Length: 187
Ligand code: MN
Image 1 (cartoon, protein in one colour):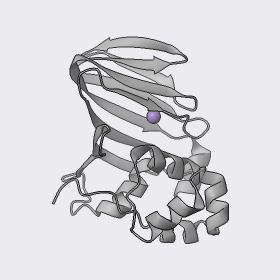
Image 2 (tube, protein in one colour):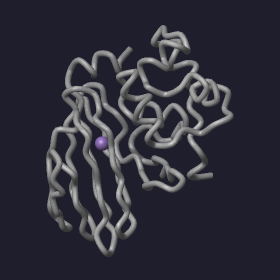
Image 3 (tube, helix red, strand yellow):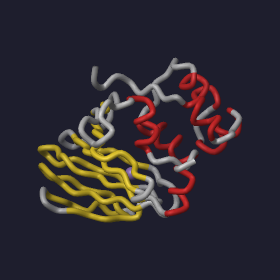
């Protein structure tokens, strides 16, 4: 079924990176106890934790989500919707492509819903393109209003965020990773 919790194969990701649990806790900022719970399948990471893990391991978010959801269609046909409890609904439109260094999400914000995002890896750029409704994007400390049909590109290696308007919003969210992150993501 759809939208089951994320069960990350963190042990494989961690051993591929050659990191001990302690070192993984250091680079991700996620506690050893929490990482252990995720590895044992006892806890499903929130989107905030998932982003911390992605940043710590220098991996695009979709490589983590894909590893856990194993979509049947590799050609872009079927990608699952991931509903993070108490958070935003995220659908993978295009998973990470190491040649393009990009991944694209389809995000749904409820009316007034605010979703802060911490800084991603150095050099990550995001684009938001609003499909439905209206929203605001926190860019360099200012909330920038956007309506359907409008887009914004911003540096995402600093804190940023998204806020739904009165009717909520649906938007495409593209992440562009710089070359260094790309090389590491291919490991
Ligand atoms: Mn972000």
